[in-house]
Length: 150
Image (cartoon, rainbow, N blue to C red; front, side, top):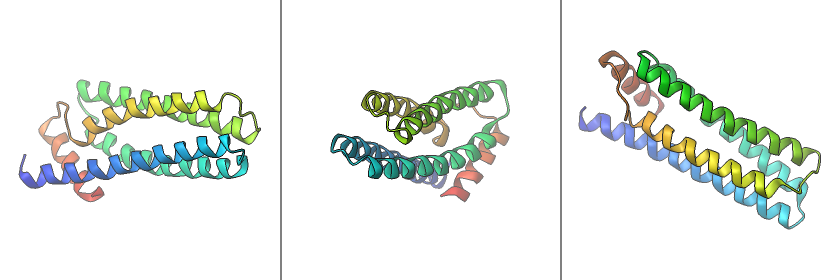
């Protein structure tokens, strides 16, 4: 892999990391807003989180499609998608409780969401930095897509 390829992967990973930090800060804001009794603003901020996370997942989907091929990469993609389903499900449970003003368990639920997102972030790092076995064809497709996304 050339230096340019490494630079593209690193650049895209830094962008994804930055998005993760922003999403995490929004969750912190939501928790603070709920604690302060600003429930409507908390719902709006959480709605922003949901939209930003969805955009993030769409970019991730493109990378997953590029590497899908052999048995090892299929297992990895399945794991990433399973983790992501857990994140999405937890997000939607929180959203439903926020919309119904059932706020009693929100702090515990948000702590769980942050934990799930952190676990998923590690798999995403491996995905972007191509730290998994890929055939030459898949590696080339991966590089081309990262170049396009960066």
